[in-house]
Image (cartoon, rainbow, N blue to C red; front, side, top):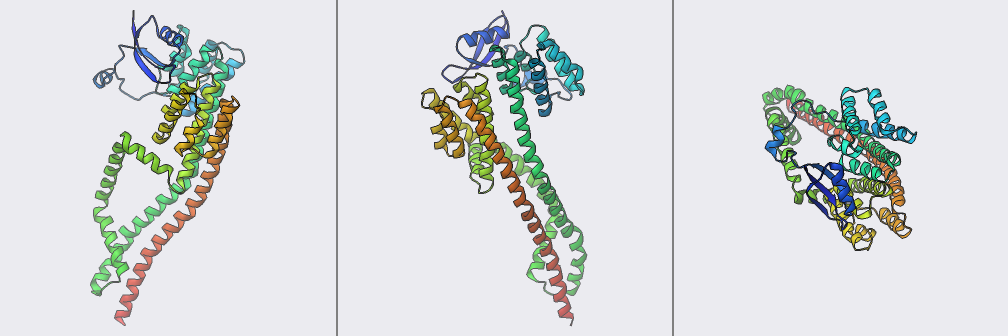
Length: 408
């Protein structure tokens, strides 16, 4: 009998893993459910685990995966087909036939073949972890086990589309400030490396003492012209070193806490974090996932180590029956609006619905905050770059005026 390596959330809320002998992955999942656990993954035990085996078993070439928009469209279309009464095989065949991208058609064909061979949809999706995250697979598995796959996919599509809309809002709002920043830095570099060297020989021939601002600008121009490449390499090394440091739990926790305490970016980051937390928690609860198991999954996908620690403390509180709103409030990470709405949901036994309402509010607040931040960044960048360019030009004019006075 084959062996399978599993990972699940136990009834007590802790994450457990091990190896189990069973006829199939589906049998492992059924056994875990009968034990009261929430399955997270079940893979063949002989699947490569160490680095050498992964390298030997890897497929070299371009890695095929579905993008975020592709997954959202696939989820929405599959939900619509199933809600219209189509069976899963016919719905997947329709999606394969209408796929416009080659790699999308290949992945969907593999999923459909696995389903036609008797595999559950969640197990078929689990064969493509680069395209479908653990949260996605867990929700699909919960919907299949409860016989509510179509409503589950609809809620999951809502979750993905809300996340994509929020991410697109952030990116699109920062494009204009980023262009201004690049253009300003390019203008300053151009002045220091191309315009300034045209005046330096004239200043040297005059032999007069230059004003202090002009000396500073000339020194900066020499650094950029002679050592600019080394400075760029140093910056790249510092960025890589910072990434390596932030990969460790201690520095990452400090950095995540620091970003949440920044004067302007901190409140906006907390709004975005609260929206992600509430949307994910509400979607899980609405799909029948128990509260403790839902909190464990949320902690794994929330993306901020400080918030993750707060959610894990709330998980321990929920295990003891004390609720989750109080430890979230004590953490000081989530906005007070989040805490009050979750507390209201606990008191009225509508935690899932109130979480989704809280997510709507925080997503709207995030969009407003992003608009305000953009409105603030644009004039600040224009003013800063203008002052820098004006400073360089005025230092040159000041030196030329001093030479003119010396000649007179």
